[in-house]
Amino acid sequence: MLDDAGAVVPGTDFDATKIVQYGYIPQYQDAIHVAAFFGAGTDVAEDGTAKFPEQHKDAWKWEYEGIWGDEPFIPGDAVIQSPDFGAGNGWNSGKIAMALTQQWYTCCVGAAGENWDLGIIPTNNGVVNGRVDADTFRILKDTKHPAEAFTVLSYLIGEASGKLLPAYGGMPARAEDQDAFYQAKSEQFPWVENWDTIKAGLAYPDIPSAEGYRPNWLEFFDRQRLFQTTYRTTPDLDMDAEIATFEADATAIFQKPQ
Image 1 (cartoon, helix red, strand yellow):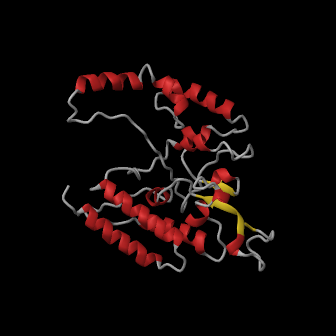
Image 2 (tube, one colour):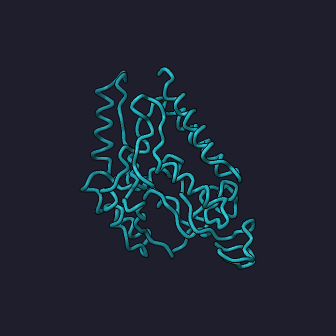
Image 3 (cartoon, one colour):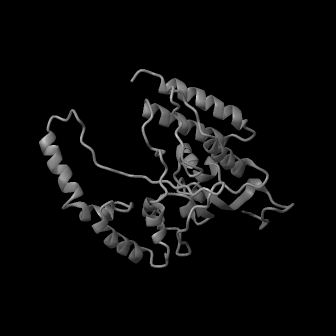
C-alpha cells in the first residue's frame, strides 16, 4: 500500500486516509462469492435455517480487517466507486496490485495496461478452494412454445456457439470451442502466460456453488449484498454481531413461503 506522500505499510508515517495504491481487491465479488473462495460450504442447514460455515465468517472478517484495520490493503466501497479507482471497476484503474475474480473479467481490463498475468489462488488452511461461475441457457417448464424454444436453444449452444464467443468473456463449456477461445484471448493479451490456470481451476469448484439454490433466492441475494455494503462502508463495526444479524435475517428469508 502506498499513500500520497510515498509512505508504505508498515510505516509510522503512513496515512491510511490518503492511500493511492492498494494491494488487493475481490473484483466484482459479492459477499457469498468472497466467502466461497475461503472454502466451500452450504449456508442452508438441514432444518431450513441459515447456518454460515466458519470459513465464510472468516472470509468476511478478513476482508473487513483488510479495509478498516491498522494496515489496510483493500479498498472500501467509497474508494471502489470513486473516479480515481475506476468508478466501480477497481482493478482496471491500475492502482490495485491484485484482483481475485473469474476469467470473464478479461472483458473489462482494457485500461489496466500490459503488466499483469493470471495466477493460482492461495490455499486456506492447506485446502485448495476455487470458484466457478456457469452461465447457461434454460427453457422454463411452463413455456407456451417448448418445441420452438428447444430449436432456438439447440442453435445457440450448437451452430451459433462460435459466433457468441466474441461477446462472452467466459471459457466455453464445449471442449471443441476452447482452443479457439484461448487463441483469441492470447491475441488480445499477448503478455499473459498462465491461461492454463483457468482449466486447472475447474478441478476445484465451490461445492455447493455460491450461486446455487437457496429458498427465496432473490431476496437472500439482496440481503447479502446489503451485508457486504455495510461492512465495506462502516468502520468500527462489530462483525460478529453483524454476521449474526445477517444469519438471522437469512433464516427468516429461507423460511418464508415460496
